[in-house]
Image 1 (spheres, rainbow, N blue to C red):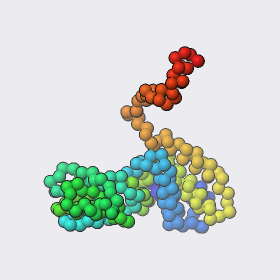
Image 2: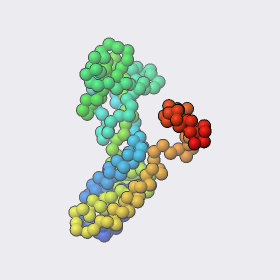
Image 3: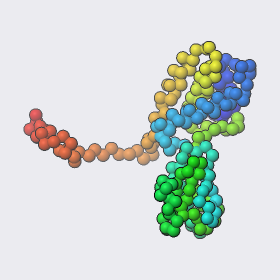
Image 4: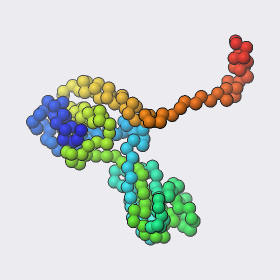
Length: 226
């Protein structure tokens, strides 16, 4: 379901098939606000559901590199120290006051500083796409052909939430929309989280600490049947 389709459905929900109170631009803005709100609900269940990879060229002696647009913070920062490196080496995060002391160590670290990532010590070679950001950006829809990076049913949750936002500007009751939205959002754990249809995790009970947890009296009760 792309943005154009969602806007058509949204117009039906607000009983305005022809633009009157809300023009297309306003509805597109409401759709994007609703999209952000749905993404937040998904991240409550699975913080890594919407990962993205972006890259920066490194420069000799350059410490600071701007974070990707819309990022909520990196999951991992990787570095290629040389153009011949086959892969990015994950860096350890340090607070700025410690990271800036790494000036001549072979162990490169990174830190946060506002909109920037600091690399210490600074790269000694310029590498194209030398810095890799694995991060969780807040996605948005710029074109009518853009499709949300969500499970299909949640695309309709965006429509319903956008309708709630639109009706917040009018005296019309929104109870029906609110109930429907909660019903759709309540199914998020069935599509996100630790679920793995291919290789489900085996449940392995561990009772080796039973005596330590419950004391010898619990063990005696079990042994004697009491």
